[in-house]
Length: 350
Picture 1 (tube, rainbow, N blue to C red):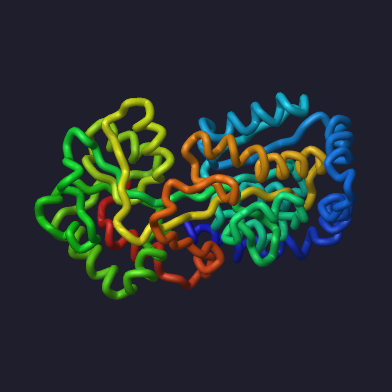
Picture 2: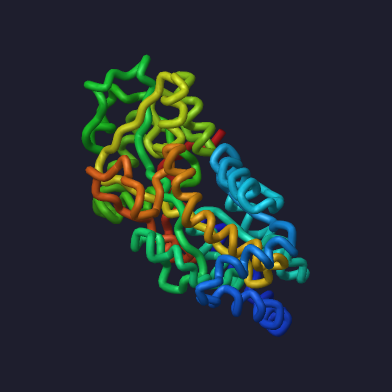
């Protein structure tokens, strides 16, 4: 996805220049409110939100995870959250295009870190000095402060328990070059950030050669969408997936599906996050929802098997060293990992 975001950043540079004065004026009230830290901050937000009546949320998260957050927030505060969901490749251009036409619709956005970095470069996000930041793990906090991690998506390996025995699972990436895995391996089509992080940890040239060898010997079943790939593992169409999200696998396992996950070290983590619009039309509601996601929302996500960024909830991966993808580095339009990953997989995604 980095190539798409890089092109978007290059083509839309003029947006920030042409709309700068109007954006700055619109952002002033939001910025002042975002910096408000007096003891009555919570009550100020609640009172203002009641007058606004609700907010608009743009998200790329699965609605099965987003809806419990939204429903709990609406029940607690009596506010309406209007949700628009699509993939991160659609969330970013929608927001940028709306800014270009000076239609500022979203109040809060929740999506993957790479997309949020693109929006931060486009000056669409407002830094929020929330009192709940101190309760988060350090990796959730970005240097610029204009978005905050709210969940960790851990790239795990998943397998169909009816087709593959636990005792036969590979313990190293090198084992996947064995011909016994021919026709059994699946990949999500757009996870260049995962491949970049894995290559960084294992050695770039070494890992690229290894995956080329695996592709040549055993091939990959390449699919677009982590949920689709995980469902295909559960159904048995794809016996093993190399880059599933562990939380999706765990949710299916808990429902009785013949699927489980494991980790071939290192465990690669993608940070997803939440941010407030600099032009939020409902700033009180937006900041209230932002705070909610980073506080009570962490409990809700944790109960669903999502890896929380809160210090209060223990990760199911506490025994594994976690290696985070770097969303900022993947915005470089000249970086090679999207093309390299596509070249290695060879097969067009279905």
